[in-house]
Amino acid sequence: MKYRADAALFGGRVEPDVLIDIAADGTIVSVTPRATEVAERLSGLVVPGMPNLHSHAFQRAMAGLAERAGPTGDDFWRWREVMYRFLAILTPDDVQAIAAQLYVECLLHGYTSVAEFHYLHNTPDGSRYEDKAELSHRVKAAACEAGIGLTLLPVLYRHSQFGGAEPTEGQRRFILTLDDYADLCAAVGDGVAPHSLRAVTPDELTAAIAIAGGKPIHIHVAEQQKEVADCVAWSGAPPVAWLLDHAEVDQRWCLIHATHIDPAERARLAGSGAIAGLCQTTEANLGDGIFPLRDFLADGGRFGIGTDSNVSTSPVEELRWLEYIRRLETRSRNVTTDLYTRALAGGAQALGRRGGSIEPGRHADLVVLDAEHSSLVGRAGDALIDAWLFSGNTTPVRDVMACGEWVVRDAMHRAQPKIAAAFARTMRRLAGVL
Image (cartoon, rainbow, N blue to C red; front, top):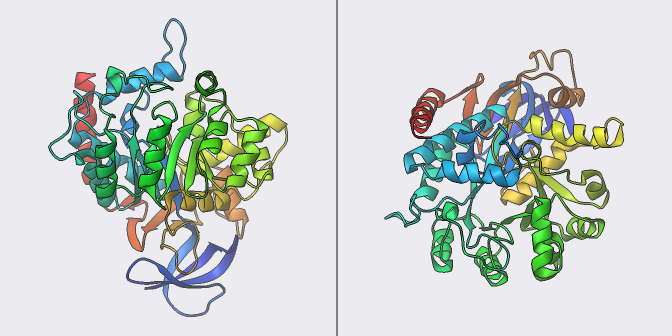
């Protein structure tokens, strides 16, 4: 199928009259700017869909439940206890309904693929489901229903703290043996996700890397200062340095957060070719800290963005936070450049997918922005991207294609009513038992 876009982000800039030829398998055959050939018109600006490199889908349903401080204050670790209590009551139907709603919301805002960092494996009492991949299958079913591209990353979670400490009761839904984990990855995995250095031992990390082969490897690291201090107490080194010293970190890897790193770690991470997985709205919500993005980019580092706890499902909001925090740090403007294209490239690498740009051989992940929307009207060329990212709070996303298939038309998802109804039923049930 051929489409002619009024304008499209191609080759790092907005070009007019772009002809996009898409094969039946959902890949792009050719892209021709300033074309004259007649084809179905895509009115507005066409941009590559953004990869979402880090999501915990079930957390979409707990947004807003941990926004009141206790008498002794609040931090990440208290939030985590709330999360443990919440996930203890989720059923497989709940998991699927929540994930489907999340993925619809992501598509409506311009994400077209997602890396699901999936660590909910067991029943509430910690036993295995009859189908050991039950909850993974539910996530896959949700992604299929929504039509979003999925990189499913089963999580290996074995311990509660550095040094192989026994897991807590709140973590019992996460725990798998290494054999069960290998079986799960073989059955449904698109990569691996050792949860963190506190949740796996060095030997278990090595086993997970072997299971990955050439597929993506994602890991939480250096999100909290307490985590860094605990890692130093355990090993004598901070977590990013330890990881770089003990694993062959390369382009397969995505280090989620990596917030608290020193200059030496920052330079080494940049030189490794790995992606820094930045989830700015979640990191702000949890009070994690600020990643040294300016210096990381100056070192040649690569990054992508993720929704993480899903308090926001908008790539625009993630990118605004990335830039605005740097403006506050430096008391200047326009600190980072090419945010959208950098995040596209980093996200595609982290997901191990052929997305992230409009060019031959890539997935046809296309987002059509309404050029008549109040935030874009009167703009042209590259100013359209700037207007989208830095003006307005309503989305100009009108149509979305994921891997060659239209899933959003005229700002309506094809299965939105059905998915929204299932989500509402789940939320009402959860409200009755929380």
